Picture (cartoon, rainbow, N blue to C red):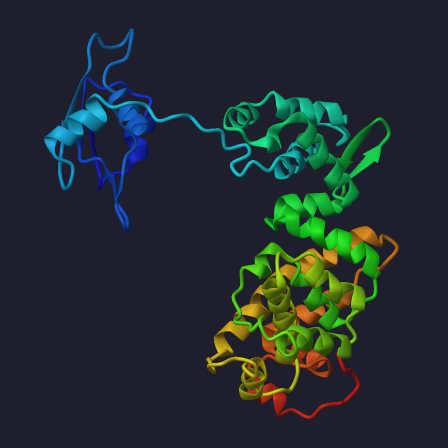
Length: 372
């Protein structure tokens, strides 16, 4: 059997046929940059040579090439040391995602209801928890596991039923959507106090509370306390965003710069879904900057990422207010963010087959029937 960097490594590591000899030519995976095989992968490949009960003896031959010379091949592979095994159950030490996945799996196998102790005992006895404790990670302490579970309950991701607990639809959404648990927890706590009725700019503002939007860069001048810091919250309030939600942008932020960036991103997205020309949007966003920078790209990135997170905002609102009918405003706002159009063009956008640019949309006559 021949195993080299231009051949499929799964053949060498997974084939269930014994071989008398294995020849390995190079130990580098193709790609940019090329990545060397791990020692465990090398041992797995050479393990194809010989099989107890089938062949009396097996041989392996390692042919170094590229940056792997004979001395390094001997030291790193023939006489190498196995890498430490690391659990992937809680790679970041956060048990909340694992709790949701555990409950989701249980729901598929049974009635979906399970005792809290069963979940926590499983996590506490896992290899991941053992490794975390050995590494001094407090998140794996039993009390922290209980706190993680309680936080999921208070955030409406898990609910009690009978003698146990089960996932809510929001919890299932969180586990399946890939949205960070922190984002959903933050949205749940903030939107519970805001109420169910938000306009499009309110939905856009709520999306800025997520970790995902915090990662979208927008330059701010947070040192000018009397200019940019108070300006964007005022703009959002003028657009009908509840004060409670605007205050939450700052209360849940790490510092003034982040809270200002959140409000500025929301205002940028709100201007994007209006008739305001891009050059005017850039001028407004640059007003307090010492150096003017091009912002067309960042504004589009903010609109696109906000659009991606609006389903999470809608899912939280639906869970918190179960009597609230399915809200078409989320889908309408997502379409507006995609096209950069105002509300009174939505119906036309749904039936128009011709792709228009944002300036072309802005030149269409307005009915004046919607503001947000």
